[in-house]
Image 1 (cartoon, rainbow, N blue to C red):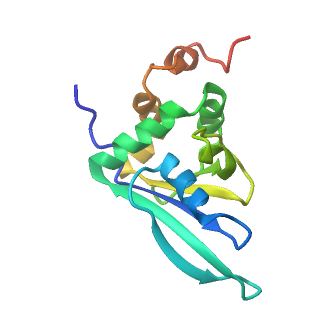
Image 2: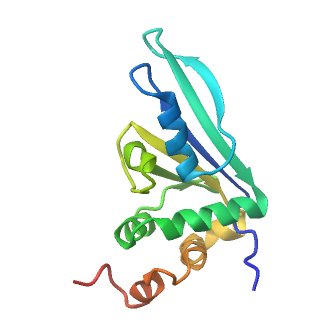
Image 3: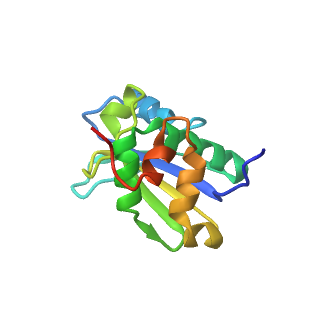
Length: 155
C-alpha cells in the first residue's frame, strides 16, 4: 500500500567553516538528504566567510526521504526524538551530528556543528506527529514493538 505524502517538504542545512573540507561537508549533507547540494557564501560575525550548504525535497519524495531518515536512526535516537519533539508552525526540527553523517551514520546531536533538518508537515500530521513518525519509520527495525510495549530500549 502506498504511503500518503505525510511530509510537505524537507530541508537540510550545514555550514562549512574555513577550517573544514567543504566536499566532506557536502557528502555528509547528501548522506542525510540525497540530491543536489546548493551553496551560498555568507559572512560570519567576525567577517569570516562561511559556506552554507543545503538540500531540499518536496511532496511525496520528501516523505520517502524522511521515512528513510527515521529508519536509519537507531532505536534510542528514535525514542529521544519522540520524547523531545521540537515543532513550531508545522515544522519539525532535528539536528544530526555532522561528523557521523559523513560516515553514513545518523545520530541526533544538540551541538552547533550539526546538520539542521527542517521537516514541514501538513497541519493534520502535526496534530498527530508521534503517530506519523511511528508510521513512517515502520517496524523494519523493531521500533514499533518497543513503542507499543510502553518503554524505551529493553536490556
